[in-house]
Amino acid sequence: MRFFILIAISLLFACQPAVRFTGEQNVDVSPGDNNSGDASDNSPAGVDRGRMGKIIAGYLRTPYKNGGTGKLGLDCSGLVYVVYRDYNGTRLPISTDKLYRNLKKIDYRNIKYGDLVFFTFDGSLVSHVGIYVGNDKFVHASQSKGVIISDITEDYYRLNYKGSRRVFQ
Image (cartoon, rainbow, N blue to C red; front, top):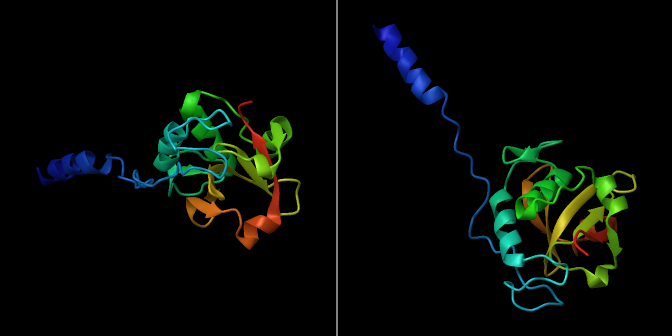
């Protein structure tokens, strides 16, 4: 009898998915950038900042996983993919290099909320991508910290910045 009770208890609790904290829902990831107004306005890059900000907030602190494209783990291009997929169904390549080569190049002085920012850390053309969220900040998947917001003006990012691209024209 005890054996059946133990099996029943283990089935009830062992098969439950673990609760995973994947981001603070109240984090403000939709600040006004240097070239546009209220955070609820659509940015000139064609992105509804409030809507995309809520999606990004849902992925903050998601752990890093090479090749990951979900809440259990993301890499940098996987983050870009899921944010734009969740935003309006846009299917972007899950490749940093393809994103860099196939999207419209924009000058950093014209960067807007939702634009992609690219970096080179390993000597390749591009090896990292993030989503610009205004005020020199971008969201990206860090190998050591998961999905975080960083400042593009920090030396590490500023010195390795490769370029920016716009998803919506």
